[in-house]
Image (tube, rainbow, N blue to C red; front, side, top):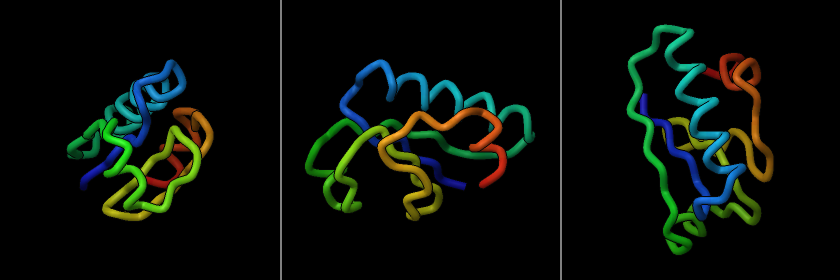
Length: 75
């Protein structure tokens, strides 16, 4: 599974990254978690507000810091 965190490095983006790591660990899933901070790469997903969570190429959350529980629900 490939999980991408889209954001420019703000506090909310960092929180989403940490929540995602925790959710993956709690569920015992093998996943590559990648931070993408390049604005051009973020725009390719059509995301207008960050942070955003992308799982296997599909935007799951955008413009919010999802909780560990919310992330676990979509993994």
